Image 1 (cartoon, rainbow, N blue to C red):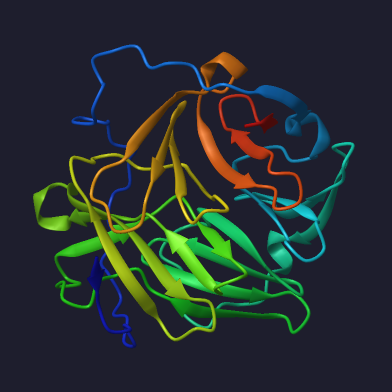
Image 2: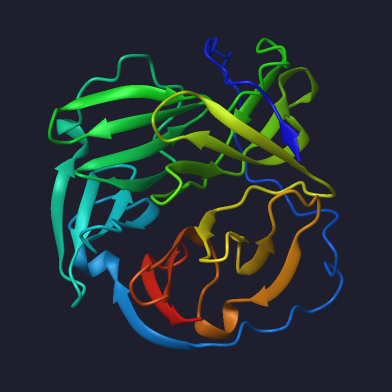
Length: 281
């Protein structure tokens, strides 16, 4: 386990070209992965449920206190989703309050923190959106303090929040801007939900992939997904456990993921067809 002091001063990074990189060295990459066991509880065609001309879904989350389910479209904002799959716009992107620091990219994932607040991530920075107070503040930056911000940049497409420990989780990649955005390291990192900065960094070995979704299990394990592959990570380890493929359930490109704390069902946002698939996992 690698513990680092909270990062207070987050310096602006230069622009970086962002691209999904291939999984090069994970165990079992030359073999056909086993299918993930489970049954489909619900399928919601979000392309039909959400009226957006350019739907780019990047996250799904559930408020642990209220049970309310939300999805985030990078182009049009946050939508609430009822049990039947009916979507209602909760907050349009154009109505987001102005952030207190400049954004380096569009929104890449989000997580409900309760009481109308959400954690959101863009390149290099995490934000806290308070929909009642109408504020959007830089809340954490997933840039290890020992790195040169002029050379290295962090990006992540996954986010999760644990209301019990008040911790935010993400698995960012570190890119070397001087080496054509070569991935130099990958981590699972935790951040203080109260805004005090980063709490811990857990380096991952043999990982060269952007994870499109993250979910927290009740035992403290972390689920990560890239394309249709699902992995489990135990904090403090350096390797991932490959669980198998979600393609058996029609999922091709995970763009968001969440475990419903009430039912234990895995909510998977499939970017290949803008479908939300709920699995009894």
